[in-house]
Image (cartoon, rainbow, N blue to C red; front, side, top):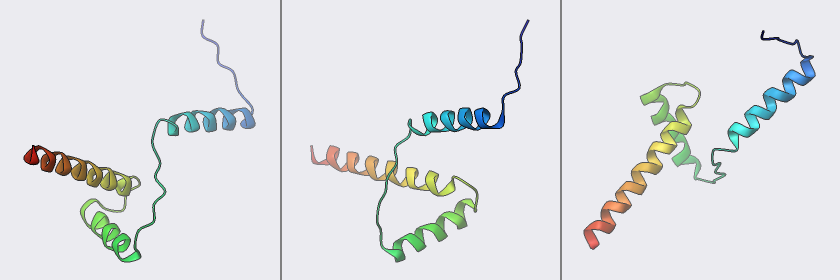
Length: 80
């Protein structure tokens, strides 16, 4: 028989925050400074292509990073 227990709000919040912290620790974080003009252009383009949904900016940055990495790999292969 499975028993369920009602936890007080403090414990529920602690557990939820702990799970979120553990989940976030699996992802990298970047704190970067870029020119305002580039930031503005990039955000406008992201919103135009993907809309103003949570996570779209992160997804666009990840896509841009992967494209940059793959383009550098191609350049290095062409040199070899």
